[in-house]
Image (cartoon, rainbow, N blue to C red):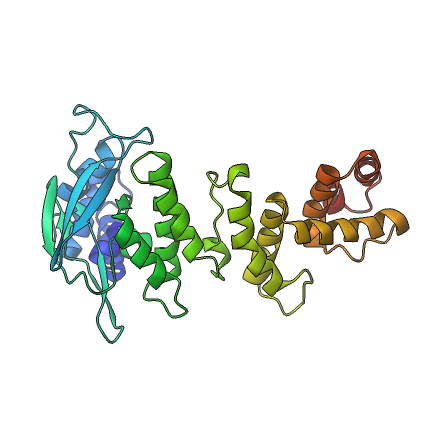
Amino acid sequence: MLSSYVGEETFLLGVSKYLSEHLYGNSVTKDLWEGVRKASCLDIPDMMNNWVLKIGYPVVTVQESNDSISVRQDRFLSTGDPSDEENETIWKIPLNVKTADASGKVSTDRSVVLSERQATIPLDTSKPFKLNAQTTGFYRVAYPPERLKKIGEEAAKENSVFSLEDRMGLVSDAMILAKAGISQTSTALDLIKSLKNEKECKCSIESRLVRDDFDAFRQSLMKPLVDELGYEYSPDDSADTIQLRTLVIAAAADAKDPSVVAELTSRFKHFQETGDDSKIPADLLRTTFINAVRNGGRAEYETVKKVYKNSPTPSAKASA
């Protein structure tokens, strides 16, 4: 967060000053802040004080008008609204406002710092915007449902102004805030649904909130990706593609998607009848075994148990 605020080069210069001044000596936390202060000419010790000395971290709530946004900070608690006693801390929050103009050119204003309980920031809200650019800040952002929907639609575009880090932060914030009761679960699910064609594995997130009660929803997210990626692995696949294929097939099977369950069952049956496991890719071995035991009977259980007891490889034993 601090590196993003002052700039990586300036931050590293500050660290270098700190190390040089305290070479072979003792130091305390504020000495590092002093080094960054000297490099950046900003009051870093004052900014960082509450971040390291006070309990918790904030959630920034956004409200908007045509030409500005109103932001308010409160302490984030997973149980919801904090009491007055729990909500005394005021952090100095680098808001890192990311915006895009009509041509799609992206810029980030790193000068905006929320150092009060609430403030109003001039901003053209008719254009895409997002706080906490690149998700470098240690805080949550709660948007109005209408704004989060717009951000989700923009994030879903092929050449979105919002990066992978931005999209990961949006999903994480939405789900965590919904779980805390600060925002609606339906709003978070709408955001995830808008990102159903996400290709980056790290952002193809299936929250703990999205469980058995949302099987149909999970299937609608995962099945298109399963259809696109298929079940076969190629030496030309990137590490991200391999991980994403494994993740979405496992998630679709866990959501009881009929076609995925049937495909994995068919591959396991061939192995069960012939002893030939060539139809089960190594990365899908665990998912295939889980699917077989979950949806099968005693015979499937005994087959997987036999693999565990007489496994040809350590990885097969671990999968069983």
